[in-house]
Image 1 (tube, rainbow, N blue to C red):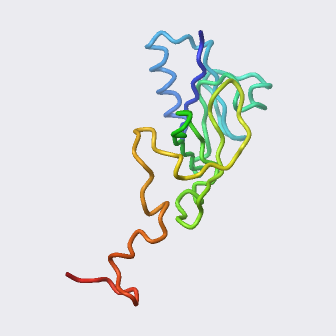
Image 2 (image 1 turned 90 degrees about the vertical axis):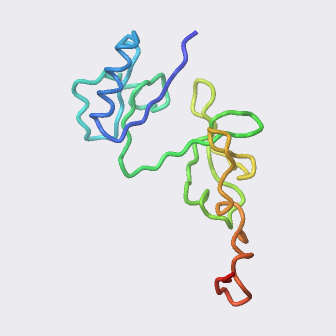
Length: 151
């Protein structure tokens, strides 16, 4: 059984090193595909077909992303599937209880949906930081007028 792996790199050099490492691990270059945003030179990387360039979530191994994009994957605690967070700013905002994301499971990209922050964790199993989920996480450190309490 073959599994699809998707690697995201900020630049061409990182992607080239990954291709070299995969070849050293006896992964055929015929099983790899390189994709990028328009205008990036992919010379020296495995070529992707036109239909694969249109569908960023086909059977790709090497993908280049815009350096300014921020991609975050968390684990859904109930299903143990990876979730790509589509709006990281909402994740960091303690006033928002849900965050938009999509599962990374199966062969095709899943539709976006809302996930409760309390049902997400890091891939290491750690919970999300309290400052992302609790609007009152520092209340015990401040007095009635917002001044820091000194012991």
